[in-house]
Image (cartoon, rainbow, N blue to C red; front, side, top):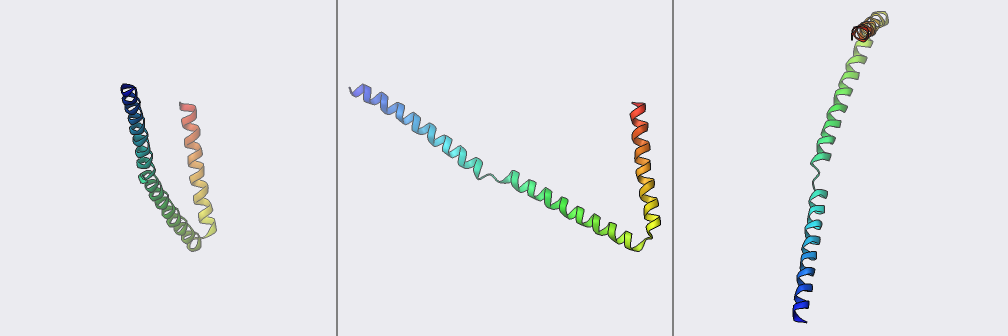
Length: 91
């Protein structure tokens, strides 16, 4: 009877140890916010970049004439389309 109790106690001790390790791993992963922090920093940087770009774009639009901006935009879009179709048919 004593041997049976010892084996049961060892089995129970192993199970408790396993549960303790799993609990610690869950806690360690839950408290690791480095991925979230890096993603947050990336989005903040992207937001700042977009704000600076739009501010600069609207400043240019206010200072330049509409016709020159339209000509520039059409030239850029046309160049991109020509390059796209050139690469599409070439490859």
